[in-house]
Structures are given as C-alpha cells and as structure tokens.
Length: 194
Image 1 (cartoon, one colour):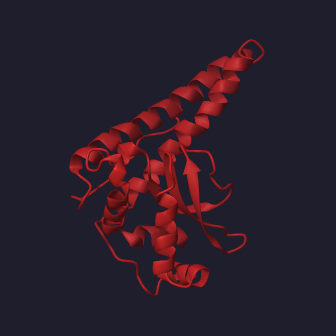
Image 2: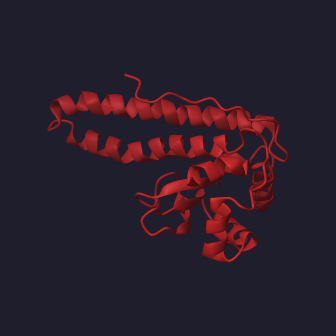
Image 3: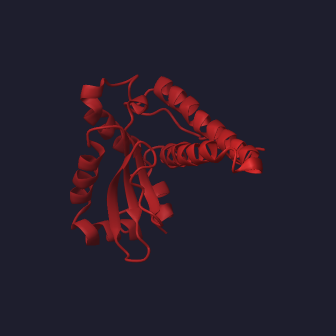
C-alpha cells in the first residue's frame, strides 16, 4: 500500500546552490518517501503476529520517525525555493512576530544562522508555538531527534552534507547557509505562519 506520495517542486535556478545538488537532493527525498511506505507496509505484515515479531516491530517503529521526518522536513525545505527568492514583507504578521521575539529581523537571522552552524548533521528549524505564541529556533539531530512536539515548523534548513556537498566543502557550510537565505521565498514561510 502506498501511504505517502513524493511531491514535485517547481524549483527555479538557484544562486549558489547548483541544479546538480538539487537533483541529487531530490533523489534522496524520494528515498525517504519510499522507505516511509516500506516501513508502514512491513509493520502491517509483522503486526499480524505481533508476539512473534515484537523485536522487528519495535525496530521498525523506531526507524519510521527517521524516514517520515526526513520526508516531511524535505518537503518544507524544497517548497521554500518555489517561486524564486522573495524578501520578507516588513509588515507581515511573521515579521511582526520575529521583531517581538528577537527585537529585529537581523537579530533573528543571526540566531537562526548560529543554530544552522551547530556541529553535526541535522536541521535548523524555526517553529511557532501556537499555545504560547512564541517563535522558537531549534536544532534537530538527524531528521527526528529534537523535534518540538506540537509546534508548527515555519522554516527548515537542511544541514546534512548532502544538501551542499556538490557546491561547498564541509568546511564552507556557512557559504551554503548564506546561499540558502539568498534563494528563500519568504512568502512561503509567511503563509505557514498565517
């Protein structure tokens, strides 16, 4: 059974992020979709004799979060490039919330970029906590460790080497972060906030 379907993205030519890197990155995303489906199907089969396959079910359930969050994180990531670069609207509700939370857009950007440069593999995320009203930045290890439960992801920056390796050596990942923001369509992020 197909639980999940790979999405397509209309990503224009990007500045500082090559078409080759996007092409390879999209193949990786397709793998997350494939294995999310595979694991769900395996769980369905093993659940027919849950006692016999208790170990397998436990391990598949643990692995599912990695594949599923990898799929969904990438969908957020790629959709942020659709429509081409677009500066944040200074009067948008998101920009007002950013200024309230951090004092200025520049202060937020510095904070988010520092999260993105965390050592290791993972994701820099901006979340909206609808219960408290706050915006929160967070490092997510791998795809799934450290996701903040119940919070709405607004902005996702993939910091695994596969996201930039064709364009920048690992020692220059800061250049990739800058290129990401040069290509970001803020209107997509603003719509997630609304």
